[in-house]
Image (cartoon, rainbow, N blue to C red; front, side, top):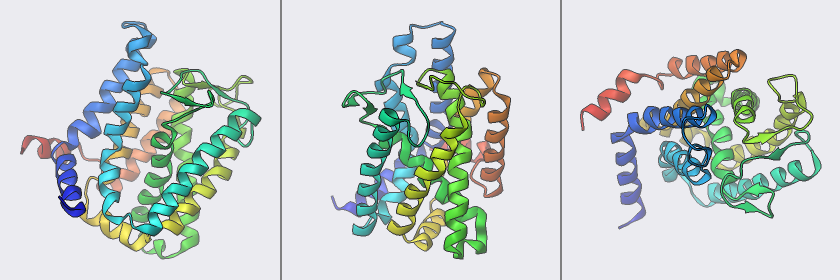
Length: 276
């Protein structure tokens, strides 16, 4: 079976299961996290790192299926460099405190490289950057012709996404900042760090992919941003549970952005599943 046929089958599988992937999985994840926090189920089950990775991989599948047809040699090299950079910046961050501030992992999210950073880190890191870039291609409209606009907007969205992610992750004890921080236990240095690390990551995406081809793919692949739908549901729900209302408000803004470009419609997601 050739590559194009595999890609087509993968896309069909994702399309036929959009509601399950984009809505059911993050809701199950939120319920499991809450059940483990209360605790209604054993923590080893609610926060099992391999279950977390499995659920994350499933929720990432729309992004992967959307990108696969566009990964050529240049994009492959960019993703390889991004992988190396992801491990490097996280290792430096954990061991030196630069650029995010002092932090360390509390929950081992699967196998840990050198006992320091998760081996599956790219699964968690890549979508922050790629989804931000894709979202901005649609939100910017004609202004997407400007490289500076694409770069600046994507970097801003990366930081916005982490405004939702980090407070809930810290509350769940995925990782912690020993010195605490004014933003729900997260220091401002973390967000200055994301400006630094995010700039390099967005730059690699910009150099590795043809932005016009990405936008064309977004037009023909309606589920390509479903991973961001999952993110808003899961982390918006977790922040609501912990009464982190500012991150909830930021998640709502992301929801509005997705609605604006017609990428967050429960009725459409349900109808796709029901029509199978």
